[in-house]
Image (cartoon, rainbow, N blue to C red; front, side, top):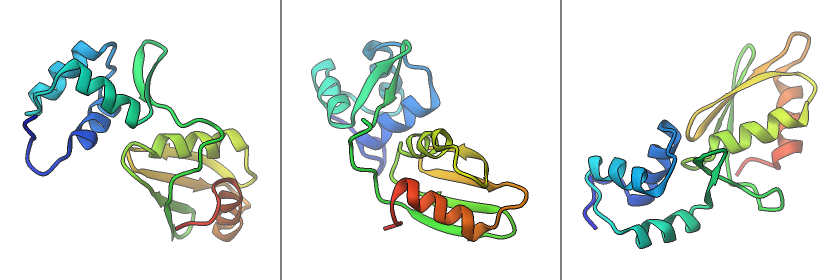
Length: 142
């Protein structure tokens, strides 16, 4: 397995599925090949399992079960109305979904990237109130 620079195969897989609608493993193998990775379908299949990546709605996505412990994250306040959450590669969207589905008071909305989540504080709420809500939903930052 050849690698591209210092990026690990796992990081490359997570980045590719976050940036493309990947319908099958053959397509993923081609995209990873373009990144400088050469691997077999069997190896790819095992890596997908290890990373909790499954095919959902016709494309590969990282799936975190409801009973799975949430990943560690850090949370920074950016006054006047923004919280910035940093987590592991490929987990930004999963945490955004948890926050969005909670309908937490004071959360105006979220914007998720691969490992970063921006949480907008709604009118009439404070950063401290929304931070407390996020920590109630996701547990304390680590």
